Length: 428
Ligand code: SDX
Image 1 (tube, rainbow, N blue to C red):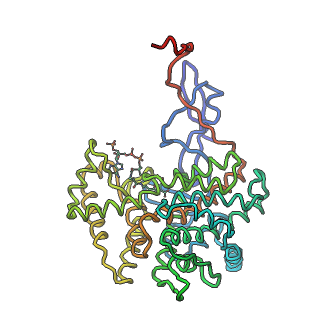
Image 2: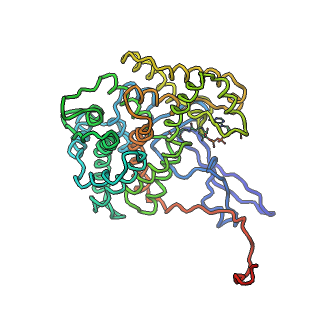
Image 3: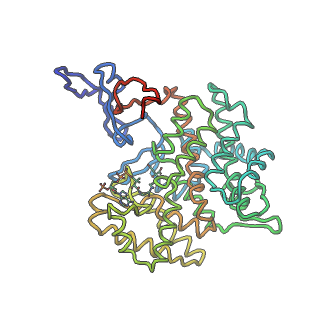
């Protein structure tokens, strides 16, 4: 094991160097405070690893994303979301029998308790879908008390992982139906997972509904591309909440809340709203690129930039191609897609973006497909959560099985020094 040397106050300390599977290097500082009395500080954890994980590998310089070692490009082209969910959760691609069993276990739990409808009734139809989803996912813990056991055996954890994979599509579809004032459509288990979701979203009791196969394929691909992304903000949140031994429903609900932010999963909704604004403003792309560069202007180019990817987000490349394919298949010409492509072209030739290595990220083109499918913009981030569910579940279980300690970072205190209380009468 290599060592790093740290010279502090005339003393020399040694820190273990950790090397990851792909050669990533880290300093193990787990004993730093005990050895030196010092802590490290890294606001936003831009340079700090929080765990050891075997699930997803990202190389931001090379634009590499792999789930359990499999390149995202191959999984997006050849796999299905449920097969990828199995891979993320269990660590290996399933045999046909294992996948069929996994799918059957999910089909058996696609219904939600009828009492949960009362939760939907409590929300105004204008409620943001992420707030509703976070609430009803957390409420599931009330219906499955076995999940509250902080030291539940693997079989109980696995059953609740299956419940979430099975019920979240139903919950999302019913959130949409509630917004539209339409009757809820119940799952039909003879349908495939994504087909069933679209059936519950857009079906009606008055006629049979069969989603376009191009749409099923495009959505399955989007779910795969969103399935996991190592220790991003929402996944770190799921692991953090789970580290206190809170139940899996509360942990996933917290992840949904973290993903809601416009700097994270909320960006896909912001991108479409931004593109619509540019279109309404006459399509003057250069003007908005200049605004994004102006430090005095709060406007940012949503869907651009990434904490890790500093060349390109491999998911954005795949989604851009899929957007072209699904719009052509559906015979849709979306002028907003043209604006997105022009914006990318202008930005990527601008020194501001080149110097800061800002490229389109996963959120930049995904909304074009959601829109073509007929999903309202307020539900785009819910669709991101739908895909990321598999990764959250896999990461939560990995954290639990590793018996990781409760997450409790330190800080550098910069507040007032010791001072005595002053009674209000003497405060003037
Ligand atoms: C996701 O972590 C993940 O893996 C997330 C995700 C996942 O799958 O889980 O990939 C999903 O969240 C994608 C990101 C979606 N968010 C957006 O598209 C929002 C717009 N982008 C940003 O706000 C920003 O790029 C972040 C939040 C994505 C990354 O921020 P960082 O790493 O903290 O970088 P930064 O904010 O410090 O920016 C560095 C510089 C700054 O300029 P300077 O101060 O150096 O002059 O780049 C500038 C920023 O002002 N900058 C942008 C910009 N993003 C960064 N300028 C204009 N437009 C932008 N979009």
